[in-house]
Length: 66
Image (tube, rainbow, N blue to C red; front, side):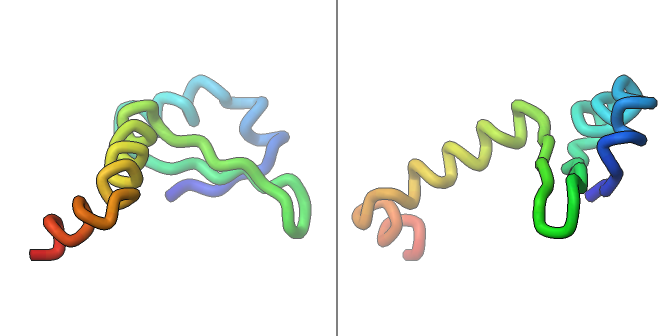
């Protein structure tokens, strides 16, 4: 996981996005005390969505647990 500020992200956006997509890093951009943004690769996002879908059904959840 990488953490940065919005200012640093703007200065070197290409490098940060390359790290996210090539190294499967998650990037957190802090925007204040309790505010921020998370950036992840599309591949990582799709994997999370698939997992969420598989666990959304009680039958699938039970099948995966056994």
